[in-house]
Length: 212
Image 1 (cartoon, rainbow, N blue to C red):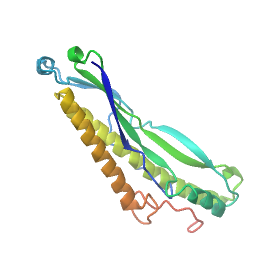
Image 2 (cartoon, helix red, strand yellow):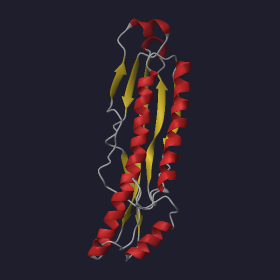
Image 3 (spheres, rainbow, N blue to C red):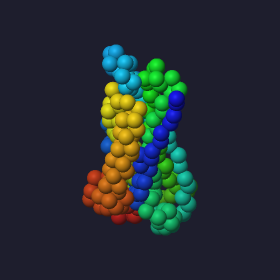
């Protein structure tokens, strides 16, 4: 009998800045198949193959507009968003096909996603204001990329852990992965004040003209 189990892997990336720094997505595997070529899994009802349905380097990216003629106005518009100036993370889904008893294969999906701001009046802004926006955006992107990377890492680890597990064991592993993912996402935001904390890795998400 087929079935699907889904859990949020963390999309609670609240950032007060941005970053396109080079801490890009890491720890995930490209789409493919992970499996064991033996008869043990086939004879014991244990998972023999995991189809990996995600690409850690290609999260789904969406945007929202913020308006303002000056950096101060844009910063005020972002503050109205609350602590979350961007979102990054993923959703894990484990699917058991209807023929699981014979195929002993499952599909693991990580819906990796980013949600980032765009400044509507950017092209009309003065050069120092563009520099300030770009600096903030790069830091924000760096913070959100890390949230996505954490989701990719945990999904990749789960794919390995599922091999040679029964369906019941697999569901327990999924639940544990979701809990671990949420804890890691929360830790990142606690350590960085959702990206707003200065002087820390994945932080410095600050929008002002200082330093420009």
